[in-house]
Amino acid sequence: MNLPRRLTPQNGFLWLAVAGLLGAFLIGIVALVFAMSGLYNVSAAVKHFQITEKLIQITLHRSISFHSDDEVPVDLKDQNLARLGARHFDLGCAPCHGAPGTPASVVMQSMYPTPPDLTRAVDKFTPGELAWIIENGLKYTGMPSWPGHGRKDEVWPLVAFLHQLPDMGLREYSQYAGAVKEVPSSELSSCNSCHGGKNRPPVAPMVPSLSGQSATYLQRALTEYRSGTRQSGMMEPIAAKLDDAAIQKLANTFAGESRAPQDAPAVDGNIALGQRIATSGDPQNAIPACLSCHGTNASDKFPRLNGLSRTYITRQLSLFKAGVRDQTAYGAVMATVARRLNREQMDAAAAYFASTATTPAAGGGQ
Image: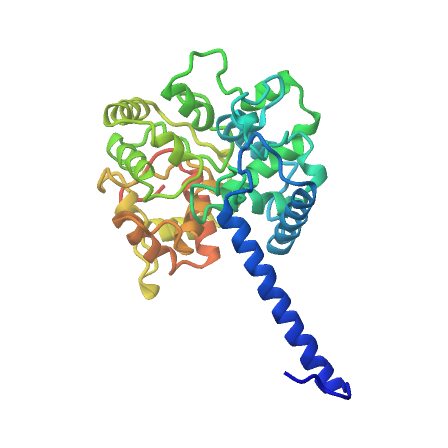
């Protein structure tokens, strides 16, 4: 091959491109030979080369920054959010990352890379970045993605908790994550820690009270969580450990309890509109009455909504509307209805049910 006698911009770029391709090819061959040789030690007891470690860290932080966003749809100072996040942190995060007064597992700390101490995570990452990491996980680190697909609403309580964590000592952490620490660990105490029980309300408005629900509905819900057909990164890991007998026992226990309203009796919102949606629906837009499925004379496989918090009801309607909760037969029915509701109707129906102490029958009043 003859080289050009005179170098011009045109043929100069051509030869530069050829040289670049040839160099890339040779580097690829060397990398392939190195990989196939098995010389690189992948032992977790042997650290990467410093240059490799640096490149991984740069790639990691740039990727997180690129894929996350700056939108924070919650108040990170909300103590209710932080308490809910603390309970999941204690269950799902502390074994690897440690917590105030409790070091991480020695076994987990032998991983490479080592799960970091999250006490000062808020100094390293923005709220949006933390939410992205929790939701998506990180490849090659042992950090899993959030189990409940589409449930980013469950991620923000953990972000709120991480913003509280730097100033927490053992006593305060135990109060946040402690949910009945003085009671021996059991499935019931674990449920009570978030959902409350008897005369104790749930830990936060976005968590439903289970007291007074039908045992049939509770069994259905826990079975769906266990199978993964109902999405929740908080509930799926817990339900996965329950056998049929434990599910039935829990369902019967909560069904036998009376429920106190989660919200104060006077609930802001268009309760009159909510009552019309609940009792009569909106025939012009093919929206049936809520009470046709959720009333006292309806199937006990549907939940009773009286006294549940407005926050919880509107959040669930939003999940149905977005298609997050349409993987089951019952969920698909509700998702169809939710897609026909506008935001005003959703808020009004939630306000109405939050203000009711008992469940009316279809066509009945408050």
